[in-house]
Structures are given as C-alpha cells and as structure tokens.
Image (cartoon, rainbow, N blue to C red):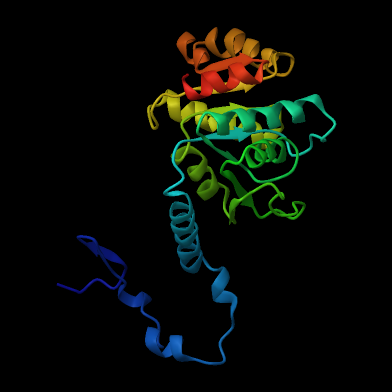
Length: 241
C-alpha cells in the first residue's frame, strides 16, 4: 500500500506528511537572522491568548464575591447617572462585594470610584483600544487585555450578578452575552439589573413585542432583565438581598 503523503490523523496525533519543511524546527528556532513577524502569526497568538486567561485567573482567583457593573465610557462626572453609578459602587462594597468594571472612564470610573472611596476592592478589566487611555485612577486591582473574549470571560466567571447602566454597543454586547449565557444555562441563573427606566424601557418593550411575539424567545426570558431607577434597589436585586 502506498504511504499517504497528505496530512492525516491517527488518534489525537497529527502526522504532517509532506508538510514537513526542509529546515528542521530546531534549526529554524536557532536562526539569528530571522524576521520577528512570527510574533503576529496564529500559533504564537494562541499562546498570547492563553497567557491572558492565566493572568486574569491568577489576578482574580481570591477576589471573593463581586458584581460586574457595565456602562458607557462617555458619561461625564456632572451627569446624574455618574453619581448613580458611584453610589452603586459604594453600596456594593458596603454589602461585602468587590466591584468589577471595564476600567475605563464614564460609568465604569464612577462605579470604581464609589468602591474605592468606600474602602473596597475596585477592579478594572481594561481592553487595548486605539482611543482608550488605560485604566481609570480609581482601580486598585487591574488587568489589561488584548482580546475581548478573554476579558468577558473574567466578567462572567468572577461575578455573582450584573448591573448595567446606560451605554452603547459595548454595553449592549456585555448585556446580551450575559443574558444569553443565563438563558442557555451556561452559567447559573443570577440577576441582570438594568438601571434607568427611561433608557431601557424601550428596549425591553421591543424585546417583548417583537422577539417574544415572533416566538424567537420565550416569555420568561424577558424576566431575566430587571429594570430599576434606584441604586439601592439595583444593589438589592443584584446581590439577592
């Protein structure tokens, strides 16, 4: 029988056949004049992704109970919603919870500030973006990520609930991913609290009138989202108190 020369599998081992290069892997590794472009290729990127998960898990492993607070990076300190998010951060610490945010300005900064000033653990999970300026000054435990999916895993893994302030596409992404994970049973069912009736009621009404009525989701799925205005009520619902 002719020995196959193409890639084939035997158990969990990949036999590369004629894909083996002329230069051995050892020789290639030891070349001193090679390009550094390999740092941006997929095999190396996999290791970088792995390192982000390891770094995040190591940093957050002993945090204890925590609530993730999401919201817009564009909210100014003189906005009443900034004060609301700051109060939420303070109340969470008073109840024994760490506060996790995306570490940016706006609502995230406000929640971190409330947690910091209350003497609690104020966590920022930053993301490298061209227009972002790093973690806000109110973070006392911070991790920066290159990849959104690694970062979002940390939000979910180390939280007992979510509080979602008004925000844009990034906030919506975090909101609907968390709702999907709860809906599909990928994570245990825990509260997703939306703060700001004026901002969120239109979205919730649309979900009910369009998605539920069209049979795309079950009526009970809407109950995953609780809409409130009061910081104290938001914290009570998020912490199950």
